[in-house]
Image 1 (cartoon, helix red, strand yellow):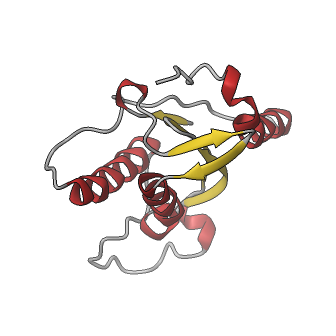
Image 2 (cartoon, rainbow, N blue to C red):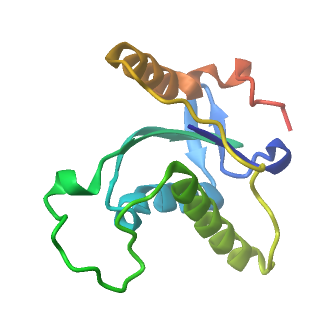
Length: 150
């Protein structure tokens, strides 16, 4: 999946010679991304990269019953048993936005482009190709379609 910032604003990082240096906001985005499995028990993270104005990442969505926990009684907590891609992305974007706006002393300011791009991976060859693309994305930043030079 790819999640873009509003107006392609370069708020998360700078890329020099293929090396990413995360900003304070980029570090927040990274921590929120890494926290996704703590909030959605059916999610496993794969490769991801935080670029200046977008995030690429691969998520694996597993069925809850595959974890051997189907007979547990429901409990009240802030952890969801399952998450759809829309729920996961919405939660991630919301958490990042709240933390960044807290730092900026703003309320309700938008940092994300509406929606996100997703691609269902059906074959190992697709997975391998997407992993390479994500891993090599910083080296390609000068030619990246999301690099608007802003």
